[in-house]
Length: 155
Image 1 (cartoon, rainbow, N blue to C red):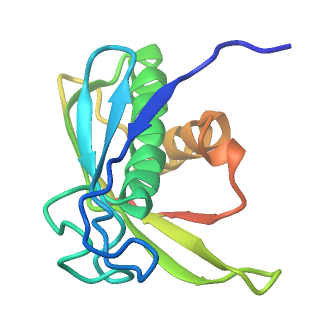
Image 2: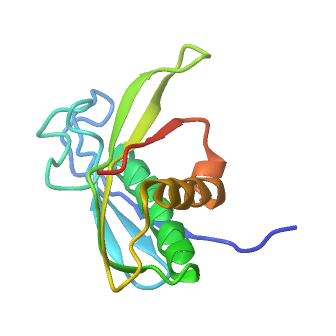
C-alpha cells in the first residue's frame, strides 16, 4: 500500500567541449512539483571545477539535508503534541562518505546536531528531549528508507 508519490524532474544540457572525454559541465537543475527549482551539480570534491559548480547543491548534500529536515519535522510534531513550544531549531548536520559493507562508496554515516530553543513554561528535561529525538528518528521516512548510520547529538 502506498501513502504518496513524490516527483522530481532533473534537467541537464550538454555545454562542454568534449563529452566523451569527460569535459562537460555537471551543473543541472532539480524541478519540484510545487514550482521550486534548485541548481545542482556533482560534488566538487569528486568532480572538480570547471566541470562542477561549487555554488550549487550536490546530491550528497541534499541527502544529508533531507535526513536532517525529516528528523526536524517529526521532532517538531512530537514536541507540539507534548505542548512543548519550540522557538527555534538549528542543525549542523554532516555526512561521511566511505565504503559500505558491500565495499561500495556510500554516505555511511550522517550526524545530526540539533540545537533547539524552547519557549513557554514547559521545557523538556534531557530524558524527554532524548525521547523526542528517538521518536523523531523512528518515524522519519527518510531514515527508514536508508541503510546509512544516523547519529543524533543534540546541542
